[in-house]
Image 1 (cartoon, rainbow, N blue to C red):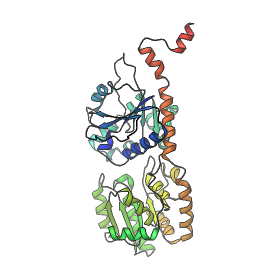
Image 2 (cartoon, one colour):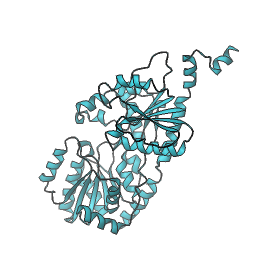
Image 3 (tube, helix red, strand yellow):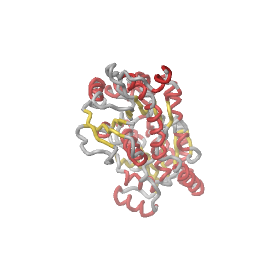
Amino acid sequence: MRVGVDARLMHFQPAGISRYTWHLLQAMAELDKDDEFIIFQHRDQRTPLITQANFQRRTLFAPAHHRLEQLILTGELYLHPLDVLHFTDFIPPLHRPPRFYAPYRTVITVHDLAFLHYPHFLTATSAAYYGQIDKAVVRADHIIVPSEHTRRDLIAQTGAPADKVSVIYEAANPCFKPLPPEPTRAALAARYRLPDRFVLFVGTIEPRKNLGGLLHAFQYLRQKYDAPDLGLVVAGGQGWLYEETLELVKTLDLEHATYFLGRVPDEDLQKLYVAARCLVHPALYEGFGLPPLEAMACGTPTVVSNVSSLPEVVGDAGLLVDPRNAEEMAIAIHRLTTDDALHAELRAKGLQRAQTFSWEKAARKTLDVYRKVAAPRDVATAAARGKPTASASEHKA
């Protein structure tokens, strides 16, 4: 089997889909030493992502998320005979190759449908790219999604056939694991000047992540439950409409208690998870929800929204709240910052829950999908070359 994986986005965006692509490739390289993998990288990303005999780097010049991407892709991919082509960034090649060329089978990963639920948060370029989702669902031979919720959402929103969609859970980076709490807190305090007690938010600052809702809950907590020493630490880059969030911090008079760190390296993020009293993930919509899983892997209890895929990821190892109810969120945070028995119980449950997700499992199931969709290619290739297939020969006989 000859598999192509599109990894061009890793040159432009180091988070989200790029992390998924990287961890999946690493895990598949550990499992599969026989099949041939062609990793398509951006022309400026000259170092091979995987250095293994059955993994080869190839350059694609088609610009990601560009209006000419589809046109250029069709011609470029014609030069690379494949059995399966996996696009981890939603949209596969939409133009069919010449009739005499036996087409590869396509697999896409649809991470979430936030762009359908919140189209007003998209840039014009993003709207044009993700607006191709209906064509992508029809064109793809198989679709991978990271949760049952996203599977149901995709089927409802696009009419995708149920048997064409497989749930393959993602996992946390193996680097996320427990550390000694006190030395970790001391190291963070020295580097970032953080308070001894804080709750943590991890994610891009954009409306659907609902940091604004958390800020209202944090203000309520400090006022009603007398928690003047508790800080709120925000680790994540600036996204769409982030200025409104920064203005809200001033309006709520939380500037002295809120710490914006920007995007931090995984080494520091691990320490933040360990040092935090709890992680709060109040998102209005998530296709999977990686920060709660990372926090649980580090032994940190979580407060998460009771919507979309988050209950599916956390199970009974976290506190579920209405993301639009600031008082309910504040009460949950208060419980985890004051109740040591509850904290210890959820810590133990979280560590156990996190172990049920792994990139090895994800890679095995993804390879199974490749083999499933590649199977009909033998017939298609033989037919394109005018050769009888085994079944055709048997039927003729």
